[in-house]
Length: 368
Image 1 (cartoon, rainbow, N blue to C red):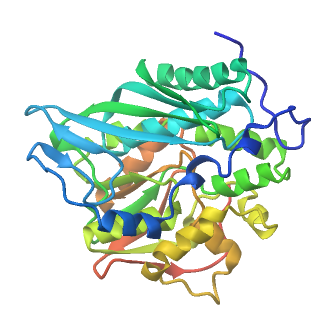
Image 2 (cartoon, rainbow, N blue to C red):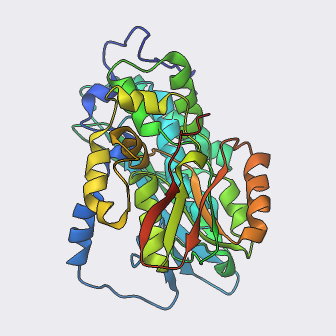
């Protein structure tokens, strides 16, 4: 295996050809806007739904789940995107971590993966493409799974990701539509990855913040497999391209409940709000708000553009968002902390009401 190249933060000397210069968007910010996606799927013709298909497209969940016997169900998902960083090895690591996360978000354990590779082979050196693949392989090795195949094409922009296949006990499947009134909401990672990536692309991201971005986006959401075994965990998803508000809106719509967030309790990456204030915001943030803003009660006297940018910020390889009974909240936090998720925090609660997200109060944000 070729040696990993050193990361290139924005304030270091740039390589002759930056990966991010070849893509119109990066990471989970490449997702089709939620409002557009909803319109596309609304006109889709209903397909065959066998009884063994425990989870399909009905609630915009993280993966499909198909039961094969009384004790086992297959978790299947795919995720891929364009570069969020210029280091090819790290790009591969981030994309692979993000794809495998959907298996953990369903309460499953990954089994194997297939690579999805689209590369401008006449533009990128073959060694660069090889490093992207090796980065993905390193994450799969960390998750204890092989890359058992895949598909490659010659494309205009660099694209990399995985089909991730996992296993879960049918009784341990955790959907994004099971939240109950009285639940506590727990977020496993700090927010602000999209803001950091926007700062990186503008050459404004500090070296230590670049290191933080790599660390959080390559941290596998392994607690999901354990959390799926807890009866008190009622709903789970991972926060990715639609931002915290978008994925929480999906929970509320699927569960028929209201989410009440405490902005002061949100774990936020250091300097994320500062980057937002300096204009380092992705285009996906505005598209996200357009798509689901009608489901959010946001007092613009309390929350300005900076706060809204954070709440709608697309999180590439973001943290797990868990809705759980109050009596298991401490255990859930302990599972996160034991597995190295130091930013994990209770960020709000679920109440009865229509499918909305609102805020308990607003004050100075907590950073870390």
